[in-house]
Structures are given as C-alpha cells and as structure tokens.
Image (tube, rainbow over all chains, first blue to last red; front, side, top):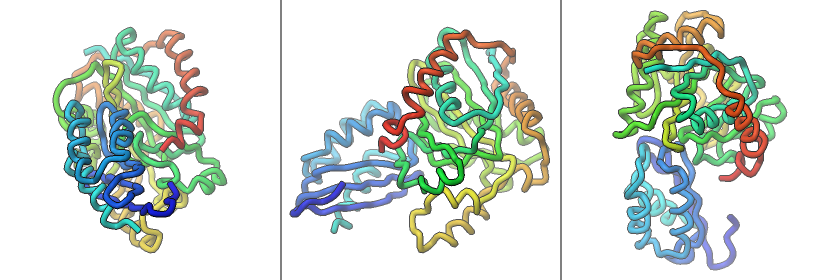
Length: 96
Length: 245
C-alpha cells in the first residue's frame, strides 16, 4: 500500500495474547485501505478478509460496530473485537 | 476412539500441508487420523493470517534452500528442520478453542513425560519443558472437522532460525535472538538424544494415552493422496497462496 497525497499511512502491532498487526491507509478519520496480519486464531479464518473489506471507506469511529458484527458468530483466541479496534486506533494515532 | 496412524517420512513443505488438508477434507470417510512426519528440505511455515514478507527473509530462505509455505491454521512462523511434526484430524468439537488445545496438547505432554521431562501446557497453544517452549501447535476447524498440527523440537539452532525469520525491530535483533535462546528448548538441550523414527513412536504413544485411543495403521484411500497432490500443485506451491497477505 503506497499512500497518495492526502492519505496517511499507519502501522501498529498490538499484543492481545498474540500479536495483531495493522497496516492501514487513512484519509482524515476514514479508513481507505487496511491489512490485518498476525499470529492469532479466528474461525472461520476467511472472516478477516470480510472485516478488511467492510472496513474500507468507513470512519474510524464506526469500525468497532463493523468488527463486532463480523466477529459475533466466530470463535477466536489472541484477538477480540476490542483488541482489533485498539490495533486500528493505534495505527491511526501513529499515522504519518 | 479409533485413531488411524500414518508414520510418514521427511517430505516437502507443499506436500506436508496439502496432505494434512486432504486428511481433514476426507475425515468423514476415513475417520480420525494422526500423521507423524518431518520436513525435507527444511521449511518455514507461516500462519494463515501472517504476511510472508513481514515474517521471512525470502531471499535468504531461497539462498539456503528453505521452502516457504502458508498453513491453513493460524499461529506464528515456524522453522522446520530438527523436529517431528504431527497432524491430527478429529470430528469438530464444540466449546472453547483453548479447551481443545488443552486436550490435544496432552498427547505431546504425555510423550514428553514418557521421555522423563517435566512438560506442561503454556499460553494458548504452546507446550513447555522447564518453562521453555519445546512445541508449538495450531488448529483450524473447517469441512466439519478439526485439524491440529504442531512440532516437537529435537534440536534447535536459534542463530540459523533467525537468518531466515525476521525480527520486528532490526535494531533489537541481538536482544530478540538472545531472548528466544532463553525461552526455547529442544529434546537435545534437555538431555534426550533420540532418533526421528523413535520419536515418532513416542509421540504416537503419547496421543494414544492422552486420547484413550485405539491405534491402527492403515493406508488411506488413493483419492486422499490424489486430492493432496491437487492441493500441493494448485494451492500450496503457488505464490498466490503463500504470498497472499
């Protein structure tokens, strides 16, 4: 992900039993693009791609609702809706 | 429970991951299966959610002849060389992920105890001896079943491992490596010198005890191998899969 003008790039590594890494592009408080990686567990695994897709073009403050909705029928260890939200928020705070 | 056992050899990374997935896909037809195997050439497997470029020095791995593969299970990056690896497929269990790790990891713990070591479960998916990690484990639940695979380290060379695995902060490289040296152990480091084939048997015995299983050795039907070959070529050997994140 290369940030065009008006877009900032943020990265964070957030510990939550395991490590959640977020690499995101922001336009002000809007998530333009996001990649979530790490050594956590979530079933079904494909949910992470859904979450990434649904977070695009959403405002940071709406992200927690999107994440909670997507993760409500999943099982997970080393990640949680709150931890993922914190990781995204940290990436936003560290954006350049 | 009846548990089929496959004593496998040291095989390539793409085949290893393809065969494990095929055993899970065919679980309904062939029943629970425990496979014990190794890796040749050495390989790094990364977790489903990890980024290959973030976790691995890809160029160095290629130089050293180390294969790179993405697993269908979560968890972290693993350098596979001096170890026995197992995979086990079971009907899907309800309940918390952690609980199922506790049950299945008992197979490794029993095996280690039978070798005279003080082993216990640690964190979400590790087994430790005297507080140091000796086994990492990862599972997925799909196709109506559960697959868990994991390692049991016979030996470990942390310096060699970190020639290939990246550390998050290059500036802290020496500190990270030193830290890992203090947190990871192996059978050899614990004074147990055992051959690969012998350790496979010890591991199978550990699972037999832990799961109260009746063990039998039997070939799987050809179609399990055929599907594994398809997965090997069309999925696990492809950059689209291995570098997708």
